[in-house]
Amino acid sequence: MKIPRSFYEQSTLDVARQLLGKYLVRKHPDGTTVGRIVETEAYVGPEDKACHASRGRTARTEIMFGPAGHAYVYIVYGFHHMLNIVTEQTDFPAAVLIRAAEPVRGIDLMKKRRRTQEPRQLASGPGKLCEAFAIDRTLNGSDLCGSVLYLRDNGDATTDIIARPRIGVDYAGKWKHKPWRFLIRGNPFVSKL
DNA sequence: CAAGAGATCATCT
DNA sequence: GATGATCTCTTGA
Image 1 (cartoon, rainbow, N blue to C red):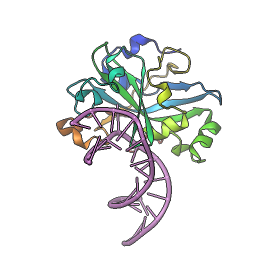
Image 2 (cartoon, protein in one colour; image 1 turned 90 degrees about the horizontal axis):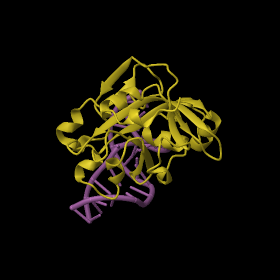
Image 3 (cartoon, rainbow, N blue to C red; image 1 turned 30 degrees about the vertical axis):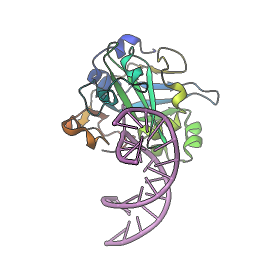
Image 4 (cartoon, rainbow, N blue to C red; image 1 turned 45 degrees about the vertical axis):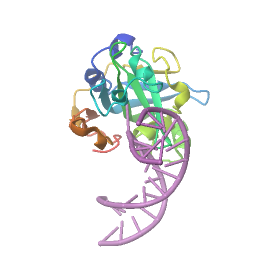
């Protein structure tokens, strides 16, 4: 079943943990791609120095202040798209970064987009995942309760979860140590251990 | 296999 | 004008 908005309105850390094992579905004219989420990161509110919204409410971060269950997509380092899911109530800026997924459907399409045959190289990182799923800024602000990009729950709950510090946020002072990166233990499709 | 550099641009100062 | 919520390729052991 498609995940309802109430799911995304929970606390960001809960959403980040519960997203593990859920299925990301992307409809596209070239075909549908589906992946099982195996790695996420939480970015929580105005206090969290690693969260973009901690530098204030701007045109770019506006989407994070909006209602839960929408996509926040932006570009880092001039190349790579990042897919985030907005959480919690309106006016509280928070989101979950989808960092890695295990390819499930549309694998040939992913191989073509990623220009590699290696299954583990298709979506084992936030930038790779966006390339494999054809996610770019045109999807910024999309409603995940719609039909172009959404998540499914197949009922197979994931319990074996581990937490680690987030990646690439050395500038965030004491916030860089928060164990807000979540992975499925032992899964070979994560970005790194 | 680990470490380092380069690529390249939207966003905010 | 500086800086990234990254990836890939090259180098060297």
